[in-house]
Length: 238
Image (cartoon, rainbow, N blue to C red):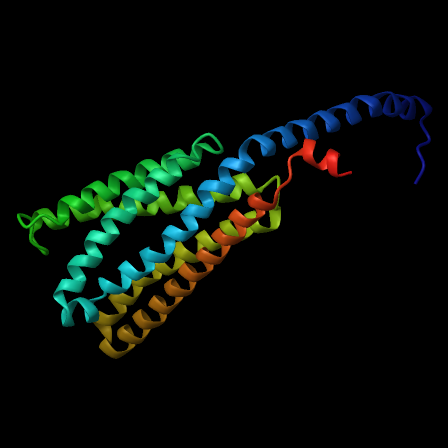
């Protein structure tokens, strides 16, 4: 299709150099951000990936079946989870300059970790009214931390790997959906114990899969930034 308005075409031709200039400037700014943030993200996301692995181990130790059979394992798992939560928050704090969401996620992890540490005190037995009162903000902080972390990963990846960024956002939707489904399973168990237990089992398996996928995505995210070459280095190679 051709333009029949010469004046319009002339205006469009006159705007083209300016549009190209804006595009070049936007690309330069994108490269500058990546050059500045990639080394920091590559370092701390890689450490974050390795920290997730012991967190899976701590979750196993605190499972009712394991903790019931080996009470010491439950105590060790809770202490380990407390330390990992604090370490996770510290690592995310190192990424605060790359994306503001990392700062929020770090503060939520640290606050949740500190309250979880208070819950480990012998003076607050599990099931006590104070235990429940403190457990509620821990759950809220964990939800907020996970949301901010997932979307922070997506934000920093947007200019480097939009496809992986989209996968982080989708993973959050699966994660929150399964958590909400868990509450539905509890209500179902009140109606039918067998159906409720089967639903809880299926939901727990889903959460386990999401945890594994998170580990894979975290590895891929760290790897993308570790493999990123600054613009100056790319010119030298060329």
